[in-house]
Amino acid sequence: MNRTGLLRERSAGPSRTVLISGASIAGSALAFWLNRYGFEVTVVEKAGALRDGGYPIDVRGTALDVVRRMGILPRLRESHIDLRRLTFLDENGAEVASVDPHAVTGGVGGQDLEVRRGALAGALHAAVRDDVEFLFDDSIDTLGQHPHGVDVTFRGGGARTFDLVVGADGLHSHTRGLLFGPEEQFHRYLGYCFAGFTLRNTFGLVRETTMWNAPGRAAVLYAVGEGDDVHGFLNFVRPEPPFAAFRDPEAQRGLVEAVFADAGWEVPGMLAAMRDADDLFFDAVSQIRMPRWSSGRVALVGDAAYAPSFLTGQGSSLALVGAYMLAGSLAAERDHAAAYAAYERDSRTFVILNQDLVGTGDALLFPATARALEERNTLLRGLGATPPAGEGRPAHSALVLPEFTTAAALSSDRTDV
Image (cartoon, rainbow, N blue to C red; front, side):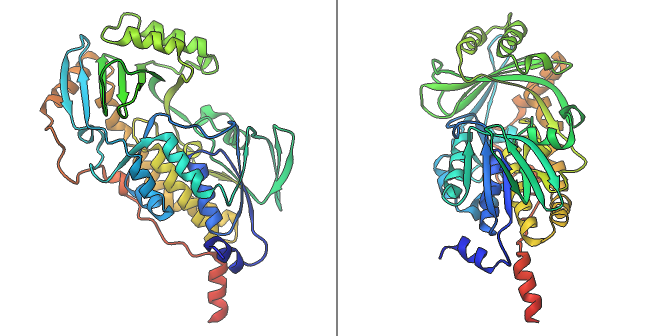
């Protein structure tokens, strides 16, 4: 019998059923840990399949302990990008500085991981796909809570009842909207918008990033390896989020083209590539800040509850840690309300510390004014070629993962006394 079977055999009564909305980083990690603790898990995902490739993401600090405990760290080490150089250019395309990436990101060389998002998602899915039910090309339509469960209708037409539901469906979470209302009340806009897409690597870039800056604008070319493609990224300051453009790809392209119309360097070619890209991703740079992450039998995890924004580099790490903490709390407490309260109590300080990293990341990467840009460039010129060994941002490791004991085991211990 496998370890999952042993856990279920030891638990009292039938397994609790949990529906997770979103086969995201948070969703798949939560499915893994809940299954490990003996829950019966279903994951519903609106996409037709897992997305491969994708932009690079970081796994740092406490999150490294999570993936180590999951047994997927060796696979992720094999997918590590190992970015070797970050070059900054001025508005005329001249080099300002070329530095070790960790000198800017606050990461720790030789310890932190940087992988394509699809590599992490694939590793998580492979670790749990044989033990968990996945419903692709579907999503939650309605939720109806009652004392004994949550009635769920699906957009594909089905209807089921679960003991618990968790929203792991990202920054613009539909589950959060059903539970707490409009996103605007929790949305903290950070003053930037961005467009990301893939284009041909005609620049000779290998495992490196080149960033062009003008006041309030940035263009980035990111080569994760030696392949034929690079990630293009266009970021710009905007006082208010362009809500009308969020659901209109043509409006998104038009807005970005207008902002960068007079830009030099490689930007005209990037705009042409963006026009033809079939993987354009456009959004505002923002966070989700909520006073509570659950209501009744429904909870939120990852970006749905506490998106930190890419400026912190901690989105995936918070998702992994949050999933571990939520699953462990549910395993340790028979009462879901007590479990959700423990999850928030034990995780919130770590979340806030990492969300507050935006206070440094935005100014360094995307200066909004000419003065701020010149100050940033002066700072970059003074950086050493290599960051001091072992230094990183303390927020990344501010939480030590607890060891959870299941409620069934606790009850058995009390009986034996």
